Image (cartoon, rainbow, N blue to C red; front, side, top):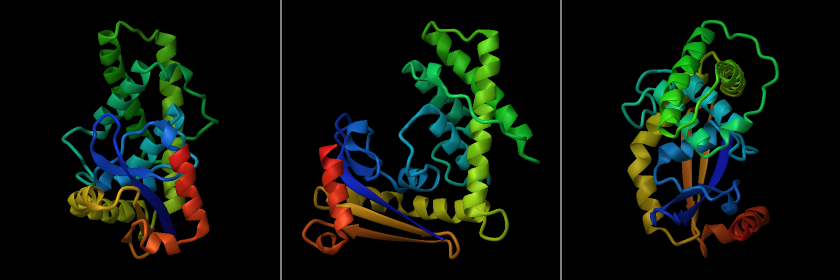
Length: 244
């Protein structure tokens, strides 16, 4: 299976740095562009095309993160563990007032050999969340903690299982895809950042990941070049993104 995604070059309004934004997310969403291949790969492999940034969608993405990057050191961007980084993400969402609206997931069954780790992850995240909330004079009641942790666990399970369905569990499954894909990202982080700085404004980066051969193909499409010979739908999508 080949996974193809398009990213458009953009200058961050807050940071002023050049980077890449997913072309399938409206410009009006206000996200800061990625300056490296690791962030691009996260959106490409660990998010869905229909994701819009809702809290439960982010939790599902973290479930896929755990499935793809469970091997120590794979795709690690800092010394933080997944537990700490997820806890920081949840804290950030609550600080923006979005966490109050977490949606209840459909019923989920435990995942053999993995669920104990996911439950421990949720407990660690709650501790991180509580610590951050104290700094903002907020508090989670005991009952709220139970509901919150239960919902979080459900969405993590859904995301984890979705990754297993998409990438498989046997040869060339989640672990091989994660290891090879993020090894490519680490190797190409500086190059993707430099491409964003050097390319013509409004250029598009096409990434194609082959889940069977475990290889990435990247193609820079610049205005006036191959981009003009690309399918009409892509040119229309760029215009729609720019107006969004």
